[in-house]
Image: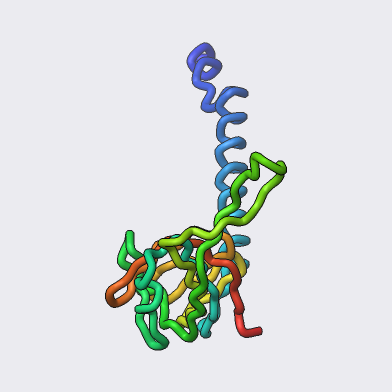
Length: 162
């Protein structure tokens, strides 16, 4: 009988270490998750951002009008309404082999459109998301489509309206 009591240990040292590690990891995940939820407070509002669409074919940039609804060309997200547009010729940097250095050369068959877009959005501490689900950040590539035109470029500025 005495031998049976000695061999009936419930936990050994290894079991206790494993249980303590599991409890510590669960607590750590809980605190990380709570901290992230507290940081991600959101607010609704309106955002204005500027797109620069480079390399549009001549004439297609002239189709952009104030009030046009823009849609993401890839995922079909609604990304806002055109507030203003400025169309300029497209310039590219090229190497000057005669004198050395870089020069800007005119691309004859292309135009650049700088478009100011306004959209309803949801802001959090880490990102701005327009109502269609499109994330707005300066420097991101944007492929947009409007009525009768499309273009690819970059978001060059974001005005949160603060």
